[in-house]
View 1 (cartoon, rainbow, N blue to C red):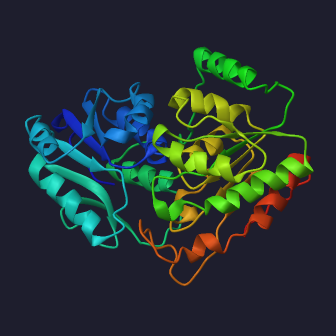
View 2: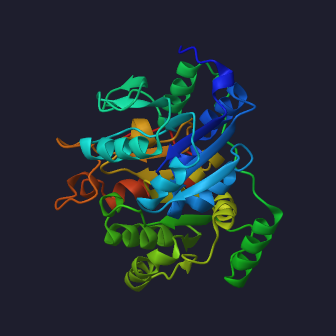
Length: 350
């Protein structure tokens, strides 16, 4: 534990340049930081595309800044923060270099972060961690807060569903002839990284086979940017699923996933929503580490399909072979999905 005089810390900048799941999994750490420094002003810097997820943290932090370009550095520097905290692992030297530049420009007396594989040369308060994870990302962040002297016993994450979002989803499903009694299967074939996307042909095989073998309704999620990919899935599939891509806000997506009897997804923010809601789900992992980024609380109906190959986890955003994803077969997903839907599933890890 590092002893820092609390009266020295009047302003803190927390940096989390990750996606939706990364922000959700930083929530317990931010709560513990708030309890440690109740009188300090805590700001959060995150990616512009993650702003909607960051809004869920406004009850803890005082202000949120979108990271857009190098001019963001100069703006933040003028705020004269006493402490900078990076809540992300640094999976490459390039990632560490970019973060070091941000820390250099913004400048603070206390520079706190996770020293992944000794890449945190610019930090003066470090939490050692290896590239190979031994715990979930949420716990790494809590351990970093523990290093500062915070109480980290509370690791709960809760997503509150607003009445207005439930009402929107009720109306959306009704317009698409989906009733409350129907078994609803959610499909998320999208991901921010190309290397996280299970081949779209596999998803359409899953959709068609499940439609033949069980009485269910299928709905496909995604963002507005994902519509071309989702439309491709719609053209391939003999059974036309309901398309929700680009038609939901984050709050509405949470309400929709909460209505699903089963959610089948690539590794990404939607998977984390299903995990936090403790819904039955199947997550297909490729280049990332399921120990670090999988479900933060294991339960029987949470199934992560991950095939270890000689190069995994590689964390690459571009790959020609995609052999980790291609080694996961549609038949495996179909079999697990049927057992989850029929209620006779026993925990499985591939």
